[in-house]
Structures are given as C-alpha cells and as structure tokens.
Image (cartoon, rainbow, N blue to C red; front, side, top):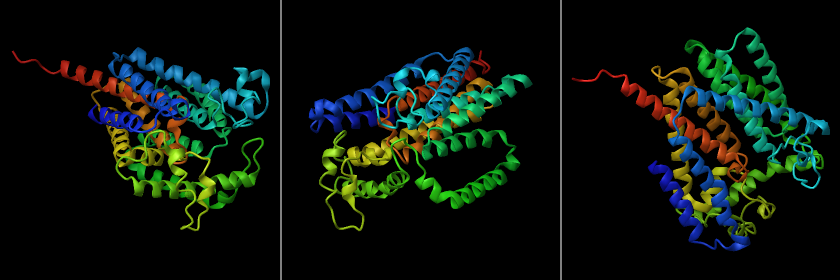
Length: 371
C-alpha cells in the first residue's frame, strides 16, 4: 500500500508541477481516467469480501466476455457485418486500426489483452468440468485463439503465449517443467528465426502496406533513443506527467546519432516503462515496477498456498498470467494510455489482494485458540 500511495503521489505532483492546462488539461484528464479511476477500482476490489461464488463469477464473466470479443474479432476481419455489435466497431468514422480486430475498445492491443484474460479465465474452469464440458471448453478456447490471432498484433500474440505458458508451467509435473520450458523456448526461437522477415513486414491494417508495417518496427529504437536522451537530462523526476510530446520536440532534431530521430516527432512512447521514465523519471517508473512486483509476488504466494482453497489460489494465478500479458505488451506499446487496460490490471490486482486477505484471515481463524 505504501508503494501504491508513493507512486500515485509522484504522478500527482508530476502533473501539477508542470503545465497541466495544455491541450484542454489533457495531462489531468489522463491522470484521472487512466490512473486514478483504476486506483479507485483497485481499492473497491481490495476491500470487497471475496467468496468462492464472487470469484467464480468473475472467471465466468471474463470468459464469456472473451468469447464475445473473439467472435466479434473474427467477424471484423472477415467483414461479417451482421455479427459485429456494437456497430461503431466497423465504422469508417473511426479509421484507426480499421480492418483489424479492434473490438469495442477500437484498439487491437487492448482488445487482444482482454481476450487473453478471457482465455485464461476459461481455462481456470477446467478442473470443475466434466469431460463433455472440457471438450466444449477446448472448442471455445480455439475460437478465442483465432480471435487473438485476428488482432494481427505481435505483442498480443507474445502476451497470449506468456499467459498460457504460466498456466502450463503450474500444471506440468515439477520434474518436467524445465525440460518442457526448454523445448518451448527452442521451438519459439526456431519459429522466430525462420519467420522473422514475415513477422516484421506482414500486412495488418486495411490501409497499411507491408513496408509501413515494417517501418513501425524500425521506429522502436528511434523512440528508445529519444527516451534515453530525455532520461539522461532529467533522471529523477522526468519532464512531467503528460508532457512527453512537448518535451520530446527538443530531442528529435538531434543529429548526433545515425538514427533519424525526426521520425519520432508525432509519436508517443511505444513502451509503458519508457513513457513513465521520461515523464516521471526513475521515481515514477521505479515505483511502478515495485508495485507490479509486489502485486505479482503476493499473487504467486497466494497460488502457492496449499492451505487456501482452489478458487482462492486461482485468483492469484490469474493475476500472475495477467501481469505477464501486461508486461509483454507494455514492452512494445504504452498500454497505460489504452482505454480500460489499466482498469483491468488494477481490478484483478485488487481481486487477488482481497482474496489473499480473505485466505489469510480464514487461516488465522482456523488456528487453535489459547485458553
């Protein structure tokens, strides 16, 4: 709790200590809607009384929502207008990512991340189902994997692989875990090595050719270089929350590197940690890493607790998979500015923390009382 409060104190001070009125108070709006509202959701989930019924209801709702997103994603990419709801999803009035599985969030990265969470929640039902139910689950999982693939977003695919690897890692017998992990990594390396060029240049958006897709990959080192230069000038507190586009204008004209930094002028950072590092410095980025680490550590301890019931342990496992999905996507996009992504992360973190508190309290109550 101290780490969370310290992180949000840095965000608040960083916002108000700079020109928060620019662009219609955009920095304040970003702080409010993308960080403070998720914090409120976290606090509500953290303080709620967790029961088996409520946690399983979360698993069920997320799984059903994931199936809906997957079906909608497949309908989008195949232009099956009758299966797309709400209609604005397929509207050319919103041209960004048109032709990809962008879903109700109008963003394929956010859409894919939600689908991954839905897929994980679906698999959490596996031990509670009979054989016919498990066969149905596998069919729905195949639909959801197809929906995730339809986002045409490499980071979403890697995030899905990481989340599923977490689930597989805890179900494989301990003696087989390291050999199985080695085989998966070798297969992944071989696949990347043989398909690297195709992965870099495949066509994604309807109005984006393969060359433009490849340029989006080439932009990453440019943005990273700009971020590093900005960090070196303001290492502790950064340039101010919500000030990146204004502050980066002084760096994109730098000609001291072989990279053409000018390409980065219209873009925000494509990395969640680098975005925080440039705007809030080591203080903000470091505290956010601490918060994610403590959340993940607590969730993993909950999963490892043999005294807790299965539903409680699965709440911890869910967050570990979600954190892996968030971190992987955050390496290639600033997912904190995608609508509802932080809301999902903070809600599931609050759920895990609340379940952990409930499980701990139950364990204490079961201890023999002294007379």
